Image (spheres, rainbow, N blue to C red):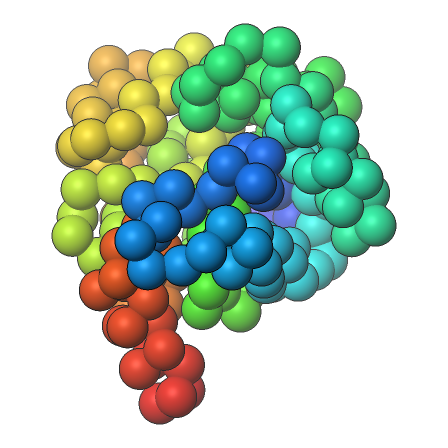
Amino acid sequence: MPSQQPADLSETLAMIIPIKAFHQAKERLSDLLTPAERLVLAKMCAERVIRAAIGYQVFVVCDDEEVAEWARAQNAKIVWQSESGLNNAIKAGVKAVRARNFDLAMIIHSDLPLATGFSHLFENCDLQTLKTSITVVPDRHEDGTNVMIVPTASDFEFAYGRNSFIEHQLVAKNCNLTVRIVQDQYLSVDIDTAQDLDLAQKLQNNN
């Protein structure tokens, strides 16, 4: 039986993008950017991520009406977040896509300014492998988890925050899931600091 190729996964895999209120985004850059500039940056990155997810159903998890209205304009489905915190947001998103019979969920941070696509993360990987593993793309410091693919039927507990790259691997092993690690120069760049902004601009200019 031939392996299921990435092009066949659009009915099986859903993209989950948690997005906090734009006016609250990137507060760590408050010494560098004005509130208006931070809002523009947050929207620009989120739009880039959604465009990179073309061909797959996107679910935006949020608790802000402005974000929801913006996401609908991007043809994304909305999952309302009832409990605060990133882990609760992602848990709600996975629950929502599981209820819609998606076998796999790809969780993507909304602040990846260099994202161009995600299908390469499961090239040469059949559906059974994806259903019995997690796929992790760490940030450039190998501390955070910028992108992750999880099977929706698993009891995987999300551990976003400091050291999530390591924590997610430990959770996977406790759930009897194998771990696939994909290093990606572009998806590893998220925007938290001035150094992140500088690197993103340099890589963009070289791309």
